Amino acid sequence: MKRMIVGISGASGAIYGIRLLEMLGRQADVETHLIVSRSAKRTIQIETNWRYRDVEALADKVHKNNDIAATISSGSFLTEGMIVAPCSMKTLSSIVHAYGAKMLTRAADVVLKEGRKLVLMPREVPLHVGHCKLLFEAAQMGIHIVPPMPAFYNHPQTIDDLINHSLGRVLDLFQIDPGTIKRWAGVDQQTVSLL
Image (cartoon, rainbow, N blue to C red):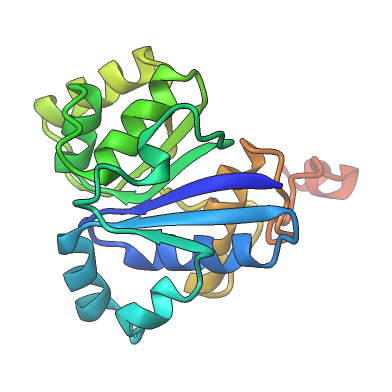
């Protein structure tokens, strides 16, 4: 059984965390551990038609953000790693500076110290120099930075297509294939001749 930690922070894009839980919930060998910040609860309410209790129901285990004694606060509790989707700049800053005052950032710190995969989906535009410095420092720490930037080679038709592709690429990092990616297969010769 793979244990995956999903953090949802207060940046715009709460649907990324919700859809991630849906995708992982369809994987028979994955147990999900969810942490949601207070700001994220508000963002879920503002941006989606989801009720928070229904989002919680998507996870196998839910941890309160102020419960520093949760299982995921210890490196001895084995996990595959953690995905923060979306990741606010405040959360990014806390993770980069090892400021684990809340369970979401403490869990990320544990994942890092144990050498497990930490994936952040930062959601902010435009980025100022301070944001860019934090992203650079995060990358230097071995954190995977995967902004939800859309791909168009797969000819998306809906917003769901964009969301699903971004999350499929994130899950590729954990060797989990939710079946949502139309993978690049190269360019056929007919298309090349038109160029």
